[in-house]
Amino acid sequence: MKRSLPLFASFALLVSLSLACFACAQREAPLPGDSVSADGAVSLSPPPIPIAPVAAAPASKSERGPIERRLYPAELVMEHQGALALTPAQREAIDREASRAQSDFLKLQWELDAEKEKLVKLLDADKVDEAKSRESAAKLMRHENAIKAAHLEMLVRIKNVLTSEQQAKLRALREPCASDR
Image 1 (cartoon, rainbow, N blue to C red):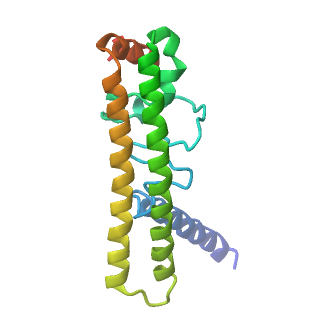
Image 2 (cartoon, rainbow, N blue to C red; image 1 turned 30 degrees about the vertical axis):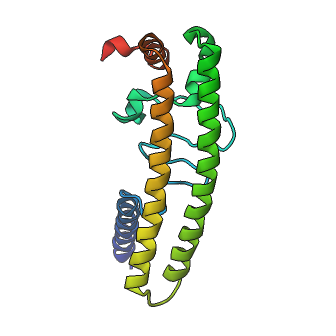
Image 3 (cartoon, helix red, strand yellow; image 1 turned 180 degrees about the horizontal axis):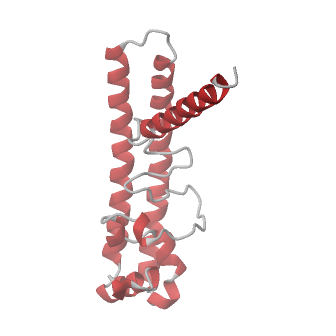
């Protein structure tokens, strides 16, 4: 008995670690519905999509992908509007674009949530109808892509409002060690 207890404990530890590794491996790729979180965060390389202005901690260089490093969220621009010397016309254009986008995001998020609910209902069955779940997942991914496209469109429009000098200033403000690249 003394001999089997350590063997059993070792086996239990091995099984626990295996299950933990398996669970982590399962979350590597986002499933349909996972690239847009409940708070509206979209994973272009997930920038937040706030419904209302929220002060978020700036993402580090390693957290931003190549697309995000070249674009500027409205929150970042407005946070540094004095340093950027934004004109009233630029402020108005960015505010108008952010307001339009937030309205679009809300509508798209509602559609996404409805589609996600349908897929969850299908997956609740003991035997899942593959064709229906595949069709539902495809609709869900179309909604996710629409949100990502709307977010990218907003970021591009904001960038286009800024001068080259303002963009350079924003890069320097966002990444103080930009010269280290």
